[in-house]
Image (tube, rainbow over the protein chains, first blue to last red):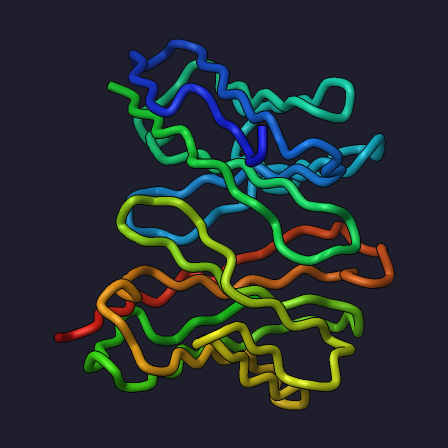
Length: 113
Length: 119
């Protein structure tokens, strides 16, 4: 597709369940970012992938959060044993390394009940 | 220490007037890029304008311009002739290692400024 695609757009899950969020970046973009945005707040960096390099996981809030990127393209963010404080919009972005802006997907709104 | 600081949680501007949204940044990397994004109530992040640390001139994109003062580490966004559709959250962001490829290449955002345009 032409833009960054995220799925699902909305997810409601019960506390304690695991969830998987998917990001399909723009074709050819080597850099991929995951961010979390809580209601009315700024963007909190979670993880960054660049090509085949080891990802920058410095923003993951706990070991319940993990992410992978297969084949340098699609990425999956997994949250295990979800908690209510995990409720937020999870945004994915991709960019060309060394170039300008990052393009964002529409986000996945996660609600933990 | 915060890498991106936006000191104005909220701003009001009269329609057709100009408005300046403040952004200061902190980095020791000489190679960096500065970005502004707009987030309307619908939630999508829309790229507005970019300034590289080695760019000699201030960036402009239509009604948007970036007042880049490198020595003061500020990158204020100026919106001229405000329109009702400009009402949104505005985020300043920085990427270190923009040219050198060094560093984590992380894109760090400020907390945002909510702009409200008054008819």
